[in-house]
Image (cartoon, rainbow over all chains, first blue to last red; front, side):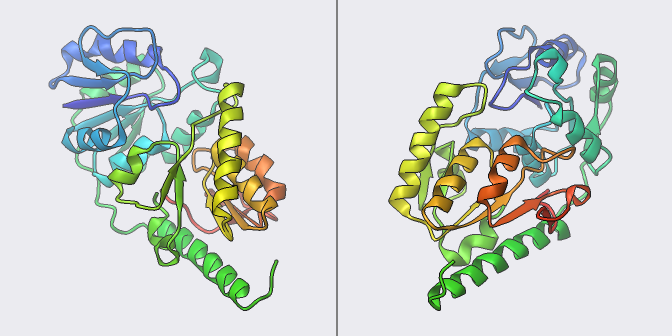
Length: 167
Length: 130
């Protein structure tokens, strides 16, 4: 199964419509989480929203994630080692408050398992390709570094407070 | 939730906008806040009230948040209650700090960006969650 998701905050009808048009030509069925849009898909199973537990199950079961450039989706796809095709929202088309999703794909594009489509043609050619399983991500030194920095700050502040010197 | 391993030794209380996350990630000390963004002023106001009430009830000595608007409300409320506050700006903002993050600046003891190229005085970079 191919999973399409637009996240929980905003509709993204342009994207859902494109994928719905492409769905009959794809080798697997598409399940679509389409948010509060007004477009009703014809060629895909769909629901407006799925809860986080079911969403994680769907990610785990799918072979490819097609998604808006939302960080929550990227984190989940990465956790389950699923290839993803990201399609950023555009502020000019009223798809988000600003163009940070364009910045996100510029920053994340090219990482293992992440490909980026900016228009229908790119999306059509990318989702018809075979996507290999991304490299495992047990080693995320940047993540460990931030976790350690936060843990150190919290520990430091706690010991400062327990020794009676208040901020 | 990606920060949980770092915070686990301190027995933290979590607040998020989706109740099901507590079940998915097995978190027991968990509170739900209404979700909000700047497109919905009424929801934002409800979220602000809920955030103030939650912080007042818990009286945290420290607060760590990755934003966005609900995180900002909690951070400001916690700071005014005397907590030590840490803002981690969303990794979704790789061009410039988020708007919530900019508002959080004067209330945050520590302010982290998750992009090396955005680091500067007062914007600390120590890696990223992704």
